[in-house]
Length: 280
Image 1 (cartoon, rainbow, N blue to C red):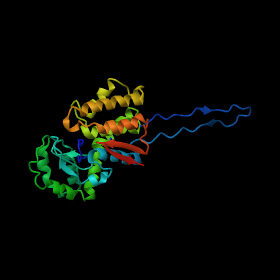
Image 2 (tube, rainbow, N blue to C red):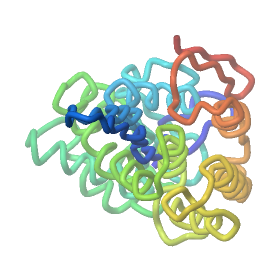
Image 3 (spheres, one colour):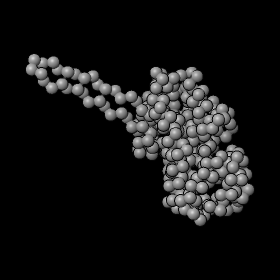
Image 4 (cartoon, one colour):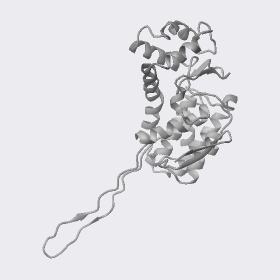
């Protein structure tokens, strides 16, 4: 899972949608039974799983994780950022110490047997749960970058991102009645913190927020709930030095929230680690 980049080159958004508002039906009761006219219901704003919104989400995460909006350039990214999770790599910060990198390489090998990373599967199993590079050094980073030129590996990264992070975040956001910005807040949290049982995991950040506010699906106000969720997220980030820079919340997500941009509509302007970004 991704771990923030409290300075620069770390590697790598949440939920959707408003209840359809139906305009009142206007029935003309005229002497000779004329046709009833019902105003068309406006289309719901697209959620984070809309392709254009998903592209925005990837750019937002990449600005925080890679100091770049070019998220597709990150398939080849790999380094140890010193956060105790071993190597962090790829578009979503798969880590050798947290199991998601192992799952990714296994998926890639299932699809492309004999690939350049397949030989590292035993080592990835051994180092899972630690920051060890045992069995990976010295050539694993070089081989990762080579694998990243293969479209099958790129697709495997996309698919694991969706299975482990994006789809669960969007599904929970929809269930909570949140629009695109809320869905992104969920996604960014699950990317950084994962969804395990530890106190700072996504599910426990959400539980912490629920103690002080209700999401729209439970009759609460969306802005009030999202502020509570972001407060809980900041608390979780500050529990770990590697995540302690909260600018991806303070000068990104809260900026959109203060502007009332719950649908994450462009243009978007924000800062992460003091650097400005823009999506037109």
